[in-house]
Amino acid sequence: MTAEQRLEAFLQEGRGPEQDPVFAAEVMRQVARRELKAQLAASAVLATAAAVGLWACAPILNAVIEPMALMLSPVVGMLTLTAAVVLISQNPAWLRLRL
Image 1 (tube, rainbow, N blue to C red):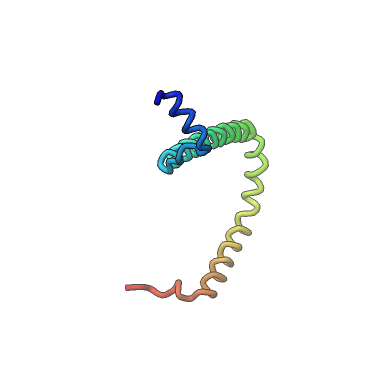
Image 2: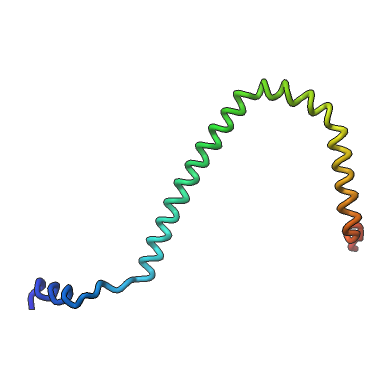
């Protein structure tokens, strides 16, 4: 039986080659790695663009945020203290010392 006859007999059987789970897993891993690299590259480009944009806007943002920060710092301090008191009062186990 020649190689062509064997191939023809194989194709006439109507079944394809058996699936190799190790090969399929390796291919899926490589595809996932390729997609991850593409997503990381896109994220890096977006992060760089955002950093450049914020750097360009820094003088304007500084002029707006600095006076507001000075005005709101006592309010933020009181809110932080209130949140700490509420959290500690709801769970007094935080106050226990473990020696």
